[in-house]
Image 1: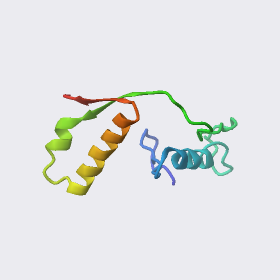
Image 2 (image 1 turned 135 degrees about the vertical axis):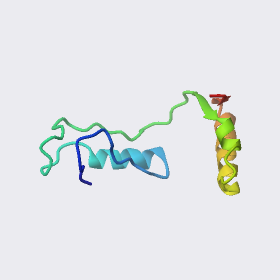
Image 3 (image 1 turned 180 degrees about the vertical axis):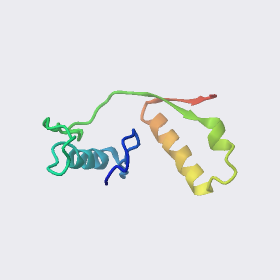
Amino acid sequence: MIAYASSFDQVGIFGNNVDDAALVLEVISGADEFDSTVSQSPVPSYIQKEESNKKYRIAYFERSRQSIPSLDKEIAAAIKDSINKLRDNGHTIEASEI
């Protein structure tokens, strides 16, 4: 990818899971012989090497999830399933009213 102008707009990474996204980030990070503006610092490993038992507090926008009439029913069900799985794994999940 080539930036057309100096801005903060950047290409993002998509992946099926965090480890896939971390692997892509490792590959695209660091030195690039065709980009004189890139950092020459060593790239750390972003892939999680061990399972974490840390529990997180996660918020989601309930109003927007319910108020989008065009939201595909399968997508809505997948969102609800993800929220339930996170809750079942011990994370604190809260709907935000903002």
